[in-house]
Image 1: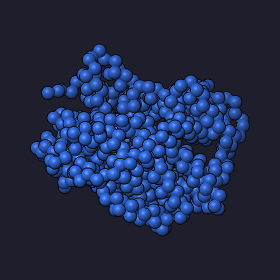
Image 2 (image 1 turned 90 degrees about the vertical axis):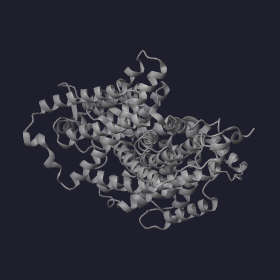
Image 3 (image 1 turned 90 degrees about the horizontal axis):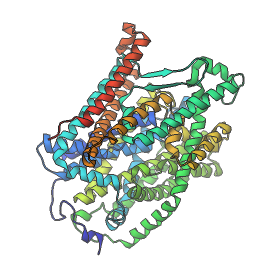
Image 4 (image 1 turned 45 degrees about the vertical axis):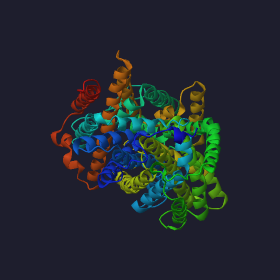
Amino acid sequence: MDQQKQFKPYIPAEKVTPEITVTSIVMGIILAVVFGAANAYLGLRVGMTVSASIPAAVIAMGVIRVIMRKNSILESNIVQTVGSAGESLAAGAIFTLPALFLWAAEGKVENPSIVEITLIALIGGLLGVFFMVPLRNALIVKEHGILPYPEGTACAEVLLAGEEGGANASTVFLGMGFAALFKFIIDGLKLVAGEISFHVKGFAGEIGTQIYPAVMSVGYICGARISSYMFAGGVLSWLVIIPLIVLFGENIVLYPGTEAIGAIYEAGGASAIWSSYIRYIGAGALAAGGIISLIKSLPLIVTTFSGAMKSMAGVKNTSNERTNQDINLKIVLVSIAILTLLVWLVPAIPVTFIGAIIVVVFGFFFATVSSRMVGLVGSSNNPVSGMAIATLLITTLILRIVGNDGIAGMCSAIAIGSIICIVSAIAGDTSQDLKTGFLLGATPKKQQIGELIGVVASAFAIGGTLYLLNQAWGFGTDELAAPQATLMKLIIEGVMQGNLPWTLVFIGVFIAVVVEIVGIPVLPFAIGIYLPVQLNACIMVGGLVRLCLDRLKRNEEEKKSIVNDGILFCSGMIAGEGLVGILLALLAVFGIDSALNLSAKLGIPSVVSNVGGLVLFGIIILTVLKFSLWRKRK
């Protein structure tokens, strides 16, 4: 029997309830901007983002059901649909677009304008939604029961359990408030140290930790295993490779450095060695990790694409039921054609006609693959970075063959890669949201419109956020390492110019191969190699807090509730710190951040600042435990 005939959604097709309303759109846009900007800030710091769907759903239920005294689950669903677009668009954008700013910092090009960044993000996001529309009936309806769509199903369960929405929403808001306060104390007032490092005399390695709630929250959400892989990568680079480089190369000038390694270390310590050499090793490991994940996924990618095409060809959406209505296919095709022309013809986007064709062909392929793969293995296991690397390699080779090389070709390659990366991320998010709507009985057409609204709002927010963060601190720095974007930049330079320190890159590649052979996931380990060890240590602390809660002697239902409360609180902390980080960036751009620096005005000694940082770190840990374990339940 047909799956659609078997399945009865929570809200029947014949029942009409509010979905797209002023409330749902305004709330969704606010959440899209908040989670989009916060995830952009987080992703540029730690190389990963966190899903916004469930926090957005919880906030929606809390506000609509508890505060506004309305009972419309489909209205809340639109809020999370619009709101989650921000995180997905941010994930696609930060992996690639900062490369343009990195080239500008080297004097190769002018800084990209906000218009250019916004247009690339906007077109990629819109294409991601439109590519998913004709796939919905095949993937969501026909393969219901075959493709679980883990995040989409979990989000539906959260919305169905809406009677807890008010209490859960307060947990998210409290997380935002606490993290905003902590971040302002650390980086605004500078009353305590945001990072503490230790090193032993005579040993060139370094260890320490950052004190930031959002970074620790990443560890809590990812769990102890992933956190430990990242920390292990950091230990390898900072306590093994850096000391070896200094020990054996003290009097040697090694490319890309321009002076003896000993002099570099004397001037800047382990951080200077990381900046000069380790980031290339980390980039090699990241590239290998992305390619390995893509190769491992190839059989699934092939069957996914062929299966989706067969399903789409064999499914005729002839039903006029409310729960089976999509945006008109003619509108979808015309929109895709217009967006393709814009990629080619808009002067602000450095893409030729060949590039526009690459965008459409690879965009649709990876949108299809992404939409079905997240249904099978979840969004967290979607190899977006591997797909981006493959796209960049092929695109850069094509551009070089047709003579579009040099810095113009490099900028064109990154623009194409950015659009396709965003397409993949948004298509995966859209499919999860449509699965949520399918289970609840939402109108697909209205969800698709909501997703488009979220993309438009998020694109403007992401453009401004990237420009602001670059103006304040720059990318590729300790503050904003931007590991994936740096990797994409190195890949393009390597293909176009061939002037990379290939020995360092291949060391990273073979480290990744060894890690894969021993059965450790490569990407988190590679990210750990690339990022500062202090940041990895902070993530590890969050993972250990989660491990303690996972091992509590409670029944499974209670343990799950405790961990989920912590995840909601940490999601709020990520949003709160991200927003204050953007506020501080704004103050730095206008040169008024120094007015807040109480540490300089009061002359606080570094020892006192470090001790204060450790005390605050302890408070952050206890706060997470408090809102995981002891929140009052009805």
